[in-house]
Length: 373
Image 1 (cartoon, rainbow, N blue to C red):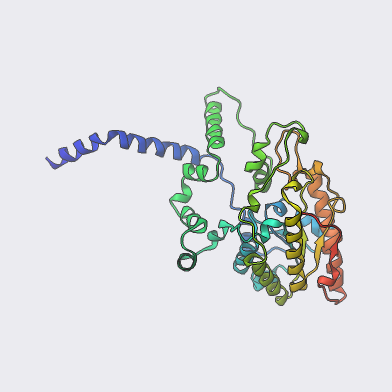
Image 2: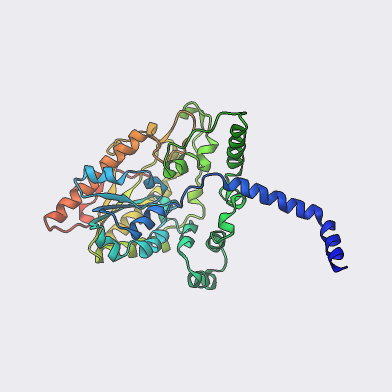
């Protein structure tokens, strides 16, 4: 009799179970979409098996698309590895470098120079990077909750746990890519049934895909020329803007630790297009430059604030004709190559040659050409 009673109760909830089954099927279908690895993969790989890297590149997604091997070639250095990750930020850089770029890893890779690419985001105390939680343990979680309560970082920690991490539906919604993934699954099924041509294989790296498919770039999709799109009035990177606090302190501590480990550090401003520069008003430009210069002086590290033309860049390198651009990532392959060459020839090369001669490297060797956002 109890079996019949439970069966009746389950049948009464058939709409609920049907909805749950449908969501499960959708979730399983979306899991078939190729998932790109975390942007921390490069840093984790270098920590697990250090590659020869006389030069390391560390920063946000704006630096992540730059070929470190090309930088090393232009600097006549023995190897280069890019360990930049999405989101950037001084706090995240210090945290992740402490976990992955340990003195043992730096020594194994024979690293002599670490180039830190910076922008206003990396010094904005109001812009925490949830990616930090990817390296958390339970103790880290509890310590953060006791000090700061629950926030984006704690949500990141739990969403990265199995089975939530394996949920195709949840990850699609969180990343704002539900529509794209549903479309990809539909096209794949249609190609299986012979109703559509199979989708072309991806030809870009994960870093390039992230740049071309971020929210700002998607909003401008379809523009034939940049003049078709009004310049942005603000940036999400500047929300809750405050500088001179935890982000600066974290970067200062990172530079001091690296120098104590025998690794020279160069701070490099990552330029944006003139089209995008409208989001930085004069007061912000002054605050950013003051904070960045003060950081470099306090750390006694060279600061490179170079013009775009010095780096071989123009606004055309930040845009694509089909409208896939955002104005602050270098989109064109030629532009990325020229910027890598400039980093090698104008930043890394001179510093490594000074080190070869046994000469000190400090703020006195900065190159400050222009005040840029």
